[in-house]
Length: 490
Ligand SMILES: [Zn+2]
Image 1 (tube, rainbow, N blue to C red):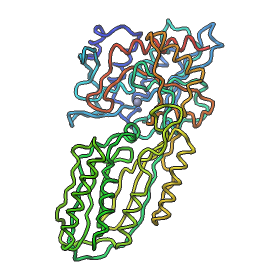
Image 2 (cartoon, rainbow, N blue to C red):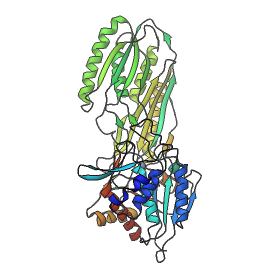
Image 3 (tube, rainbow, N blue to C red):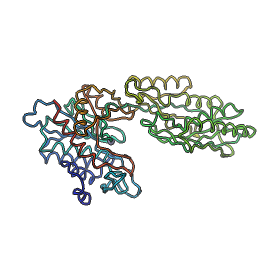
Image 4 (tube, rainbow, N blue to C red):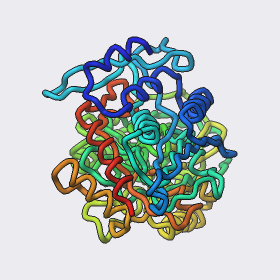
């Protein structure tokens, strides 16, 4: 984009990284729309004398042969993803046809690169840019380099999941999709979706219908914030319903809560039926329950629970089915199940009750997302859900869309070389980290068992939001670190 290129003179020199980054910005490349950028990467590689190919999942691999004298160095795989999250403050912005317009700004004394009202796509456009700059860097003398650009990391991880066996040859992987300068990521969690469901018969009732609405919870990412004392609005409302079920005549008629399995639910609604005589007891129980929930969840200061009259007559569930659905959801594993033994503060295994619904047709479904860096622990969570389903008469699904965890290992060759490279460039000891969210490294290791991996990146803040920005002065050191890794790897 011509206007982006006007910024080049105001940016610190960094090989051809900025030029390639603006090339990427000019091409629409939201998740599910990566054909044009794939073609552009292949064309760019071919024009620069590099080899490029695509596999059956549409991932692109660009290869640079070893420089003379470096033929005996091990091959390194650099890996990024081609798609970006498309979020805009202006609903009419068409990510399918428009490129990203960048601007330079200052924030807290730091020079930042941001986009005009949209996501910047530095996640992971800077990975593509740094990778292509590196493979075409005439000053770099390295062994064979491979650059893997995957499709649709932000949505399905279908690229990393469906990668062809034998598509690349390297044993050392440098994932360039991290977002913090000075941090070397050495592990991530795997995960899967699982649901428990049942169909219940509804019966006519002359009792009054009441709508209970729990709202105002902070929610959060089920990988990043699951260990914090945040309320899960779905579980919290079922907790209230469990208490209400002790009041004569109370039945559950319908339920809806949560937005996505990997998000901690912020709100939930239930319709219950009850004889009018029970209403005062219900109201009192709700007030008491809310006070208890608030005391237990200090982060959720805006949590509110309201009770209003709903339709005069509805269908409702039997006492048995009400108890089975409420009890079954409450008994599902939710929250942290186990911490990592070796890395302080790292969650090893968790499960999030995400979407739960009981429709007016009597279809009940509880959808969850489980995560673990240890594959056996994922099976354990599945067994917990299956056992709970068995007790409460719920049908439990298989592990859907499962991807593997990447068990942290700080004692690999690539970890040592990367940590030394960061130290050399930044002048301080990097922070070694593992995350409870998912990275593509785990999926790649599923197929390429000998792979040793690290993940690094320039500093990107607020990714996936229109406020996304990249700290400009972290880009050149990031590129330098990649060069040192490629040079020093023996
Ligand atoms: Zn990313």
